[in-house]
Each structure stands twice: as C-alpha cells, then as structure tokens.
Length: 262
Image 1 (cartoon, rainbow, N blue to C red):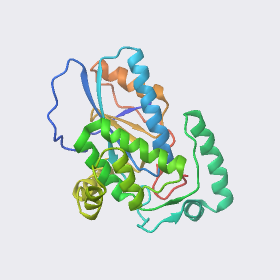
Image 2: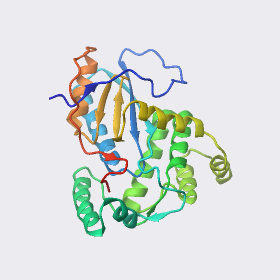
Image 3: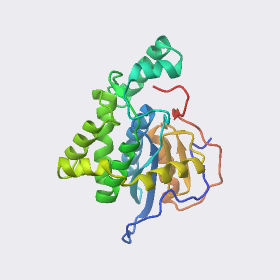
Image 4: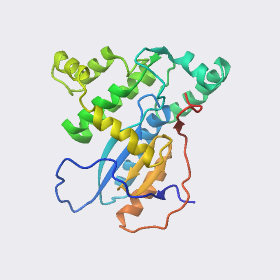
C-alpha cells in the first residue's frame, strides 16, 4: 500500500513571492501543524530525514517547506493550564496520561527528542500569527528557525507557546523582530489574524482532522508522523513528474482534535 495519496488540488495559500526559474522540480511542502502537537515534532524530524535520504539519492528537487496553522485544542484560552492536568481531563485520568507519556518519551528518543511533560499550555493562535509573519519576512529558513525553537521550548524545556513573555523572547531570539517593543506591538495588533484564520478554514476544507498533515506539490498528502521513507517515496514520485493513481493513505501517528494525544 502506498504511504501517500493523491489529494484534491486546493491552494492552502496564494503565493505572494515570485519564484525564480530553476532546473530542479520546485516542490511546495505545506505542513499543517500546531506547536503543542507531539506528533508534529516527530513528523518534522522525519520529514527532515526524508529530505536527507532524497539528497543521498541525488533527486532533482527544490523544496520549500511552510508551516500552516491548525488549532489542536480549540477550547484552550489565553489562560495557562497545567499540561498534565489538561491531558488528564481530556484523555481519561492521570494513570492513562502517565502511560501515554511513557510511550511518547520512547518515540521521542528514537528521533532525538527529549519529551518533558511539565509546564503549562494555552491557546496557540498568537504562535501561528508569528509563524506566518516569520515566513513572510524570511521564508522557509526563518520560519524553520522559529518552529524549531518553539518545538524545543514546549516539548523539551516546558515553555508555553501561548504566553506573551515566551512568544516575545522566542521572536527576538530567532530574529523575527529587532526589539521588544516591535514584538509587543505585533502581538498587541491583529496582524496576520485574517491569514491564520483562513488557514484554519482551509485545513478543514481539505479534510484535515489530525496533524501533522503534509501537502506536497499541492497534489499529494501524507498524514501523521510517517517514517522518512514515506517522504522519500513521494519525493521519488515527484522527481519523475508522473501522476500515480490515488491510493488509500496509510496513516502514521497523529494528534486529532478532542482525541487522545499527549
């Protein structure tokens, strides 16, 4: 069974930048995700490994990754909640959460992630706004830098990507803003509200109910934290510039709204 499927061609975002002509096959990769989704962190690591495998095979690819917004827990507010308490409420009590933690810690170790479950979580809308701004300002390189900092902060250092002090610090440390005033002015404004809200709707229209979800070349979908070889399979197909018949998607681990995930 194929690990990817042909999906309906729906633009997740209208390109705002002119792309230069390249001999390599230009591939836009949209990663629908949220900062508080552990499988998104794992999926991102696996994507990077898939890219490395493609380079080893000398595939003629020109990739442009962009993180797209998704609210894993739309019921969260700006008020922080203790992470373990929230998980216990959602997933069936503390004992159940403890077992889930053990499973995720092991999965994380397999890809170089040191999952920690202390700290708080809150609504991630402002995280998505600064991510959108980072991509517009610095493209994939800057947005990757910001995403990696938030992933590490939340999952390994017990920071809350929904809280203003940490949002400002991360945006400054990664070079999104030049001053604390500039950062606070951004978060005080409604900048990128429209774009991020549109992203939520577009993901829903595309049928995305769990993350991560990768859309490659606006044509193929990979659902969940698939292994690197799954990405390589898509890259190999795209490098041939052929159109395979759609097949049922083989799902990897994913976080779904209102369902078990820690």
